[in-house]
Length: 284
Length: 276
Image (cartoon, rainbow over all chains, first blue to last red; front, side, top):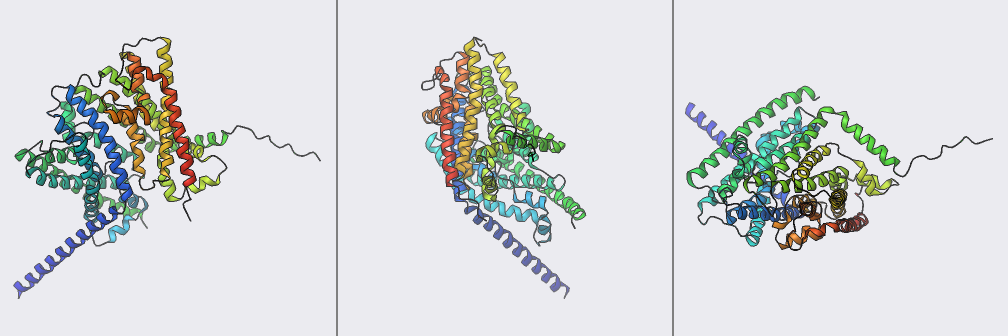
């Protein structure tokens, strides 16, 4: 009898887990569908990515040609760095509009989210992964193709970097979202988070290696960058995908990404719990 | 029976705008902590933008014919003019939001030109912090380089600074005019505004031909910094962008404003109102 009760419990738990997985999957699909409505916006993003990419590629290629050794980059790998970074920008949301969460914290609608039977952080994350997947098709692929046609890129010929690269991109998107999520939650304590978000965007893009690869930084600045999660958001997926790092080294970098995802997720959860207590004090 | 004396309308056409500007400035200083953090962010934008240039020149000694000192001048000129233009008209960026929320319709009801209302509607003091970084770099650049300070050089510098601010301001107005057509695609115009500013920071000599044509003549941001830099340093400049071209800066500015006012007119005529 007791055995059978335990079995039923296990069965119920399994059903619940499956139902939850379906729920988050549906949220991700909804995020994808929602993003796919903004066709003009995605074209606009792609166009702007390409203009910036052309200027960046021209400068960085000139730098590679005039310097004997430019951080181990040659023209092909530099082209790959520039165009992969331009292509990934849309998914990473560095330059994007503030998360919906920011407004919901500010106007108190977040209280409604607390009442829902889903985890706030995971449900927003699922929707964002869906959104990011949708931007990869019209922004990442054309950017890389455009770069291939204009400057030529050196990309790996074996499947390994691409498989690990996809994992690395997913982790980077998740990390980027979780960072923005945590920053949005600061809104529980300060009224206006705009200044903090601008600060994040400016320091983040620079330390992530958007303008100049992190490998080119002077030693002290590189150490500083690696003490932050930012290189895991952009430099890591680019390095893995372009085959700049291979084998154990690549797996280590992906491991570091995973570490940051878990750390920032934990910080976000703590902030959410603290914010919830604070919200109950304030709200009527 | 004598009528009470009616106060003669005092002030000029600009009086209402001055009042709005004064109130904007007061409003921004009201929340001291928020204002301080925004000033600090803007200051950091300037520092990080400079760090990008610095990291590149830390690795290569000469890029596009310019050394680190030349790069200081290039960065100082492009960022000073862009940042000051942004102080004046950078908030035109928010036009898509105004259109989407229907707020713009309220502006249409007032008996003042729409563009002037928008331009004076918000002046961000924090953006001066970014300009401050650029000005410091510019002064260092002017002192570090071996410049022959004859009257022509002074004239060139004065012309560059004034025309550069106007030129970037015109680009913001061009972008705003296009926003009426591109509500969802407003990011497109970032290619000209922020892309233009980014391109202006680079030595144009490294650009391939299409970019030289684009940023030299179509959206002539090369006139704000690259051409003045090589002219001040006495460098000849690449084909297509010789340094004597710098004296045509007022013409390049006029071209952008012709385009800006044309696009603005087109945009406002296209605008049908936010509904509701």
